Amino acid sequence: MKNPFSKKPKKPKKPLTVDQKISRRNFISFSSFIVLSGAAYGGWKWLYNSPEEVAGITAGARKPLRRALNKTELAVRQLFSNNNLVKTYPKEMAAKNVRHNSDIGSEGQIDVAVWSLQVKKQSGEVLKISLDEIKALPKTDIIYDFKCVEGWDQISHWGGVKFSDFISHYKLDDQTQLEYVGMETPDKEYYVGIDMPSAMHPQTLLAYEVNEMPLPAKHGAPLRLIIPVKYGIKNLKRIGSISFSNTRPRDYWAEQGYDYYSGL
Amino acid sequence: MKVIKEKHPLAMRWTHWVNFPILTIMIWSGMLIYWANDEYKITLFGHTYFSFFPEWFYKTLHLSHRLAEGMAFHFLFMWFFALNGILYVLYTMISGEWRELVPQKKSFKEAWLVLLHDLHIRKMAPPQNKYNAAQRIAYTAIIVMGFGSLITGLAIYKPVQFYYLTWFCGGYHFARILHFALTIGYVLFFVIHIVQVILAGWNNFRSVISGFEVVNEKPQPIIEPTPPSDEKPIQ
Image (cartoon, rainbow over all chains, first blue to last red):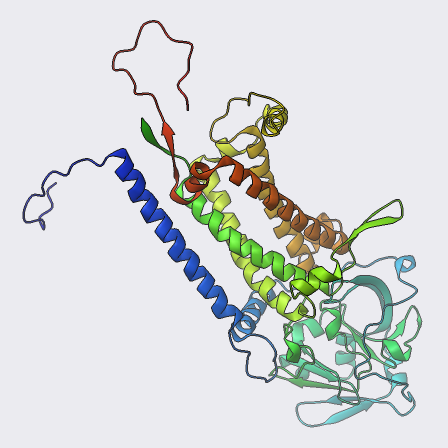
């Protein structure tokens, strides 16, 4: 078919010689290669030098990378299910010498007799719960591979009350309609925010024992969070208060450039 | 006479060159992560030969105290790494290119001859199509390794949600070692790859950018001469 738009018939072109074809194709492919490499390099420079996010609930990451972390969270949250359980091990496999990384918010000793857990409801009502009251609830043990964001992992044995059992016992079910749980140490030096599905996961514990002994100070006496679906950074030691909200509660490591979700 | 011989399809060239910077970023950000718990070493009979990595290495490349940053980069570029790899594999399967790539029965024997030839120990290399036996093995292995990185990566990224992958990789701890070992494998591949590309020369290198090679072919006679000569046309 003739092209109706071409007005005059083109002169028959001389066929290109092999050398002309070679240099033409080389020119096209190499110039595209150089332009695209330049663009890729520019894109990388842009990302690498992109400004840090405005400090808020999250801080310390490059703006586009924080955006990517938050978008990725939406994707990986789709994978989450209460049927997906962390692998558990026989008791003998638990480490005798449980690794300890940090004391932020749980330095020194604490007077357990004076300590009480404050549960702050959305209504403003505050429950004060003693350790004995918590110990009276049904106990759950878990022996699993604790995973640190740094890269190490260790099989350890924890005992306490399931967070979901704790919720139903204290009739906090309405609070679980909210999206997040926030936990802070008594001195408010360390704090974490946990999405509700992860908090209500059947393996999430408010733990008061390690290797069947009361928690020592360095492991978060008298009560700590053990949440196998999160990295260690979310496993807050020495819980002082628990609150519920629809917005992300403040989170110590999310303020230092780490992913807020940090789920496993 | 010079003749243009098509060699690498556009899809192969694209995915090859897209993969190069992405894999570089993945390895670099992986090292930022690895620094935080650098416990892998090569120990034989109680003697440590090498510890990943010496202090000067971290220092020179500024890899220390950058865990959060490393994770943020790693968990963004993993998507591109996976996507690019999947596109390449799909292309290779659909186009039929895999026939040129996947090792054949004879490849494993032939690869040895190729190696001897490359080391100038043997004069003749076995006849080949697009890729020689050693290339078939190397270029297929690197794809298997990429797939391995993806699987072991997912196994340590979401060990609870992907518990079956973690189980398949021998548990969280072992999956992490595999993930690391594969990365060392890429670096070794890279070194050999670069040496080979330099030795193979410009015509070969250009074909991965422009897609073609220039070969000298004897002009074909219009009428076949009756007595066939012993010489084969040089390819």
